[in-house]
Amino acid sequence: MARKNEIQLLVDQFARLPGLGPKSSKRIVLHLIKNRTQLLEPMVKMLENFTEIIDHCQICGNVTLHSKCDICSDENRQKNVICVVESVIDLWALEKTEIYRGQYHVLGGVLSIFEGIGPEELGIPQLINRIKHEAISEVILAMNATVPGQSTTHFIVEQLEGLNIKITTLGRGIPSGGELDYLDSTTITSALNSRQEY
Amino acid sequence: MDWHDTGFFLSAKPYGEHAAIASVMTKHHGKRSGMIWNAKSKKMASILTEGNQLSIVWRARLHELLGTFKVELEKQRTEIVFSGPIALNALNSICTLLDSLLPQFDPHRNLYTETVHLLDKINSTQNWLIDYLEWEILLLKEIGFGLDLKKCAVTNSEKNLVYISPKSGCAVSGEGAGEWASKLFPLPQCMLSGKVKKPEEILDGLQITGHFLKKGFHPHSGLPKLPHSRLRLESSIRKKVIAG
Image 1: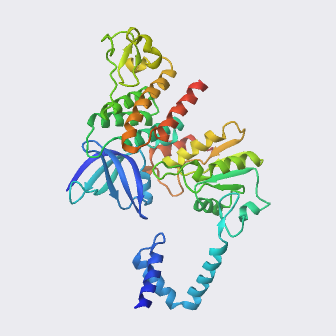
Image 2: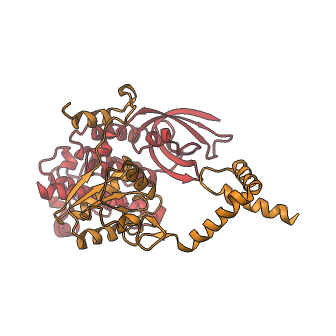
Image 3: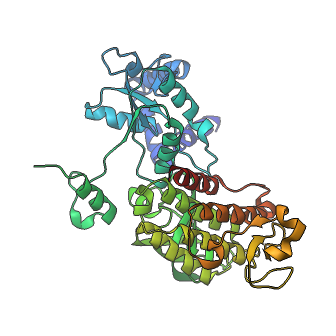
């Protein structure tokens, strides 16, 4: 009986992960039990290692196994441009493009009154401090096109006033595979305003 | 039980992984909250944007229960989100003030109509600052702190109304103010005429409405000051006025 409860506890733990419910968790647990040597044991070892050493980069807030992440340690990347993103997942999305070769700053969220997230919780003072003390010439504000995202953008712009640096935001337009008929008027207006010569 | 109504989105508090407890301002049912189960989906994320006009179906077993919302987009007001800090702060301020100050289940038909009109005006990037000030005056009236700007509280005169009492919210004429003039707010003439001669008048007006809105906040939330979004709106307008 005790054995069954422990398995149930493990199922419950998996069910707490994003995207997983009790049924999927049961299937995962049973699959891990079935593939003990190939999956379960290496996973346990890896998670144990991660628990000890995983941390946030002291400079940019990215997740890392060291005090400084790979991006901040890379000497070949541009040091004078910072791209400000809401979360690590946004950083990964930008890195996937392999176009941007500058630095990052992960806020870890956006300003939200209802969730009680203020500038201090987001590490905006650290960002301002970083911009002031490093030779930064451009800040790219890559926040999501949502009300909290844009409010955070305006707040950061206000904080950066008087620092004599170039502040840019991401362009808005038609996504690849998008059809004009399905787009909202604001997106079409932005796309028209930022049209390019063919 | 169910009802169908039109309204605009105010806010949503996350509930679990996929759901949210949303707050909407409806035409016939006032401010209402309800559960939206798939609130975190990509489709819903663009629909559940502050100020968006929605078609709302509410369902629950009993009238008093939280219930669930099924929403469809009627009109997007995304232009507000991208047309600069003042418009965005105004949108945040409108939604926060309505969400914080209005009681549930209480229809405010006039306030709803005026808010929709104001949101459309901000969305079309027309000159809307005086409309916002008038909207706050209306909001004060709806929550029981209405200003009386028709006649002087001391002399009953309808002329030379140049002050407003910070206690009663009544207008006071130059003659009626007497030695109390220094303790009264100067009354911006745009609050009487609806026409703005100098942009500073809007700021003075917002300071007055802000003073009375604080009274609305205090008993309910215990917060003696205005929400950040409202303060940020005032400061962004001040910056614009200073910049000319």
